[in-house]
Length: 214
Image (cartoon, rainbow, N blue to C red; front, top):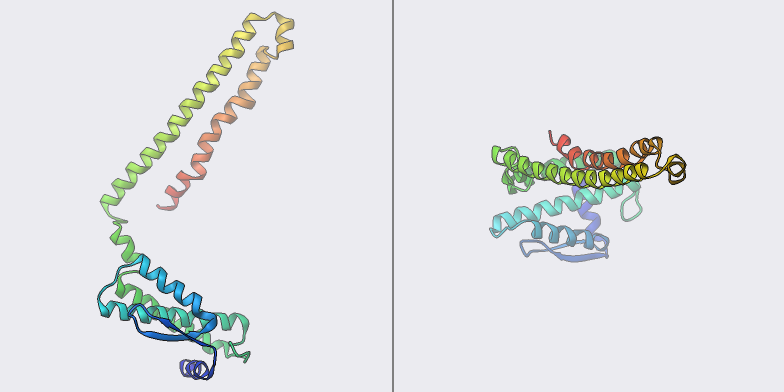
């Protein structure tokens, strides 16, 4: 029923604009929907490659269904349709739910649902696991190299402090801030925190995504 009401209202509206479906057929949408519609057509055609007319016609249906769900979602959020008339929210919510289910089936039949795309990329396969393992080992190696570089840098700084300490008398050590207490304080407040930043950054970025994939 809601579909018929929707079509009737669109037919009496003067603000209709022609658009072209993936199959090449002409379709009419409200002028406020043209950009959304054309963006969807462009995005689907750039992300996927369909040549068979049957697939293109299914893609037509998919994009039209997405447009309807988007349109009705706008109406529900505003509690009014394009013509300022109050809507039956329950009826449109039901229509959205039904068309969303059809969208999922259409995507699956066209092989563009997430499950199919994941299988095409090999996600979940042993080959994908090995590839992922190699990538993670490489990223872990980069982190270890960064740690090694930082450790050498900090060691040289600590070596300089100790040499300075050994070349100064007690008064000079205090003046140059290179007493043993200063050295220990430098290790605790500068060296260790700077070194730990590398590991913390790795855990919060790369390693966090590894855990989320488990």
